[in-house]
Image 1 (spheres, rainbow, N blue to C red):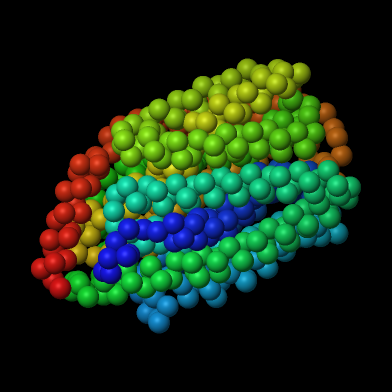
Image 2: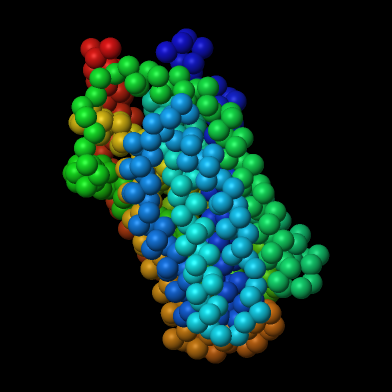
Length: 464
C-alpha cells in the first residue's frame, strides 16, 4: 500500500459518513412514522398495519444473505460493492416515495396489498444499496482504532440524519395542513437526499477502496465456498454468535421504542404529533452529542466497557417513561435526553465490533466474507424487528386501539393505553438487559484484535 494511504484520511471518513444518510433517513422515518401513518392517516386496522411491516421485514431479512453472497462474488472494474450502490440508488428513492402515497380506498385488504407490495420493493432496493455500503467499514481499513473512528463518522451521520429527518417532519407537519400532502412531501424530499448520499459516498471513498481491493487481490486465498457452507462456518465463530445476540436485543429494543413512541406521546401524554417530533429530537440530539465522546472513551477502555456504561442509562430512562403521567411534559423530555445519552453506544459499539469478527474469520479460514457476515447479522436483526413491530400492531388491536383516518383525535380505551405504556418502558428495558449480559462475554478485546491483525499481516506477507 502507498504510504499516504496507510492512515485513513478525513475525506474518506467523511464521504463514508455521508453515505449513512441513505440508511438512516429512511430507516428513521419508517421506524417512527410508518405504523402511525398506516393507522392514523391511511386508516388501516393496527393488525393489518402490523402485517404490512411484517411482510416487508421478513422479505428484507430473506434477501440480506442472498445479496451479501452475490456482492461478495461480484466482479467489475468498480469492485464488488459499488455496482450495487450505483444501480440500486434511483429505484430505492422512487419506491420509498411511493410508500407515502395515500390511496383513496377504504377496503382494508386492498390497502394492505398496495402498501405491502411497495414495501417489498423498498426493501429489495434497500438491501441492494445498503448492505454493500455497510461492508465498506471492513474494507476501507483493517486497523482497530481506525474502524472505531470510521464507525463514529457513520454513527454521527446516522444520528444526525435521523435528527434531520425529524426536523424536516416537524417543519412539514407544522406548515402543511393536509395529512396526505405532509407524508408525501416528507417521502419525496427524503428520497432525493438518499440518492445523492449514495453517489457522494461512492465518489468520496472509491480511491481508498480500489487501492485496498488491489492489495487484497494480490494475496492468494482458498477458493470460494458455497453460500450454505459459508453460513455454517460463520455460525461456528463464537464471537460472532455473541455479536448476533448483542445486535438482536439492542436494536430490537430501539425499534420497539421507535414504533410505539408516537402513540405514547399522542395517546397517553395527550400531546401533538409535533411534540412527538420534539421528543424524538431530544433523544436523537443527545445521542449525537455523545457519539464522539463515547468513541474516544472506547479507544481508551474498550468497546465492551463503553457499551456497559451507556446501556444502563437508557434502561433507567425507559423505566422512567413507564411511570410518567400526563402533564409531566418537562420530565418526559428529561427522560428522553437520558435515554439518548446511553443509546449512542447502541449505535456505535455493535457496528464497530463486526469488522473485528470478520478479521478473526479471515485468520481462521483465509476468506474475506464481509457480505455474508453483514447479511447474516442484518437478517437476524430484521426478523426480530419484523416480529416485534408486528406484535405492536397486534397488541394494539387486541387491546382495542381505535385507528383514526386523516389523523382526527379520539379517546383510546384504558387497555390500549396500558399496552402503549408497557411496550414503551418495560419491554425495551428488558431486551437491553439481555444485550448487556451478552456483551460481557464478547471475547475480542483490543489486545486480542492486535494479535489477530499481527497474524494476518504475517500471513499476507508470506502469500505475496
